[in-house]
Length: 342
Image (cartoon, rainbow, N blue to C red; front, side, top):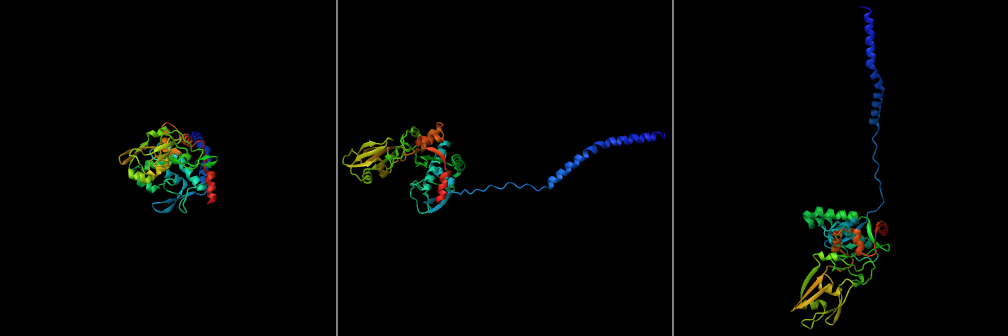
């Protein structure tokens, strides 16, 4: 009995040692983990990197608002957005909207550079009318579009963003990015409507315009009104005038009427016609005038651009069709010149 006790004590001591070995082995590692976690908790949080600051100035466009008779300063990309919104239907194809954004940005960059810039009221770069480019701000667009504002402005913004930083150039200079609504099937040579011959504003075919709701139009005028506006007197009850020449774009170039020679442009402007592609007939004391197309016809046709986009053409295809020999370039160097001038 007494011999058993020492044996039992040895057995119990051995068992106890065996049970303690895992705890002894793990303890240093647990302590190390605990110390590392404690150190991490005590280490101050790392500060996020500071935002990179640039010295690139914001370029604003001074727009003379005719309704308010005051100047509104608008960041250039917001200005482009406001022009595209006002000048082209928002439900046009995305690639057509991109082409319009490119022309709008090119126009204002050229205007801001000051070379051959169209005059604007003192302190302004442009007006908000067709004298330059039609422009509407966000408040006006919300009122104009109502419940359609959200989807329409999203389409415009997407087009403007897709072409951001791009303009059209010819011989390293921004072009005269003229545009109009609807052609008569052809665009016009610049020199056939305006005094200057511009190499990239040449007559090109534009068959897509026949789908435009503005392709055909009719205007009826009294004989008296017709004569007074043109400053002529018609002698015969049947005769009106004779078209003696046409332009490369198939519009009226010259007309002999009432002993005078007038250009198609003069007649269009004096009579308020949609196009200088016109014909007319006399019905008693009235003159009925038929026109094809809508606008001066020089540069990009908006409905033509939309038709090209529907056929799968992208905005680069569109602008290089309507502006011959031009290139798409970054606008940053031109904007730098403008900011230096300011």
